[in-house]
Picture 1 (cartoon, rainbow, N blue to C red):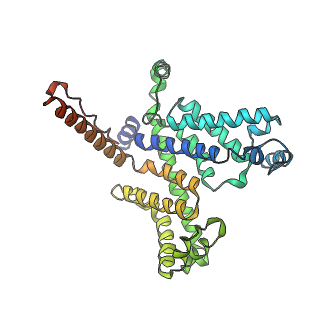
Picture 2 (cartoon, rainbow, N blue to C red):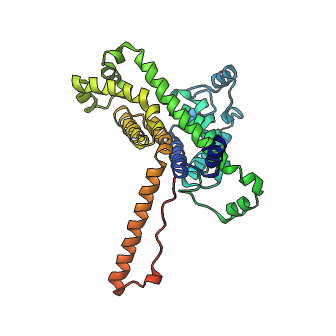
Picture 3 (cartoon, rainbow, N blue to C red):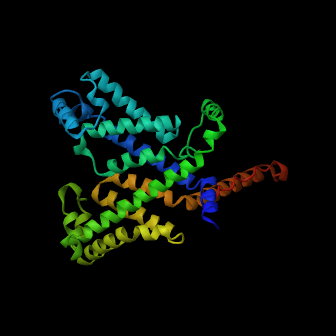
Length: 334
């Protein structure tokens, strides 16, 4: 196949639609979880007064020094702060449920960025990746699944000129590729950075990490760092996995296994170290590598549900006419 034909084939079929839809849901949930978890202390953590964790004037000085922006710098009114904070909560919930499409996703990204800039000391690293991925996600068809579609939105979409809609698939595939490349860079750079550390080279890094008070899981962490074999295996397995993850996803047969290993790795980080937001953000982005498997699993679940309905009807009426049976929706090829 010539290069032009390969490009044409790539631009004519959307890839990983189910995966990026799952990414959108999880990123919305992570934002919602952050808003809700800090809700009771929101005034002290993010409020406009000078009696907060980071006084408002110091916050403005930091923004000026970094050249960044935040909507929380626009006003010192407590009422304005409450409006912005609750609009952020609504936007995060809407993204999670799939309401509003890409405009609401963009608003969600702006509100989250603004909140993160207001109090960066609370971040766990997942915020950086989320802010990188959301612009890429805006290019994709991440609302094709797990979303509540409105008739108004469908009518607006139908009114878009065909020439504009034709660019949707190439842009979607470009966004998916950008997310995949970003994930590979995150893993590879992290792994190569760890390789340079002495504690990672001698296999003891996990011992020191799990003894940090902020990341320690009482009653569980000591079971790991007191076992030399687990410490060595965990340390070296982490480095090997991070460095070779990009190679794993480049091989189609190994891609789902590499993504599954990544999910297990980050579940353990969320469990043992309490970095739940970071772990869920990484897992959300890993879903772009698991879209075919997710599609098959969804198709199998639909078949099982359809068979269950047929059995229920059969037990109630004695038989199910062939013409009245509901067709089983097949999984879309990813």
